[in-house]
Amino acid sequence: MLIKIVLVALVLYMIVNLFMAMRIMMKNDTSKGPMSKYIGRRVLTSAIIVIIILIAIGTGLITPNPRPY
Image: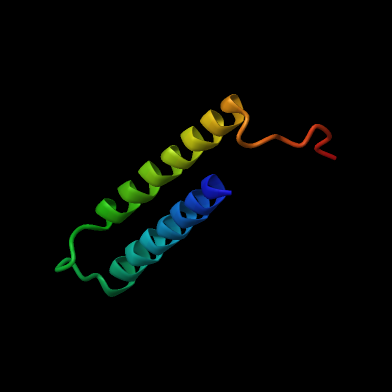
């Protein structure tokens, strides 16, 4: 259960960074840093999510659905 909470928190963090980058892009405001900083955080977060899911499946914490249809 804890692994699922961590994954949801990381997804929310990824969405927040996406909207922060969008706000900088729309306002053309460079005082908060470049847009690539937030997009880079988003990409790193998604890579961490994939790694956590693969490790959780490998160790048996999460069981995949045997019939995906």
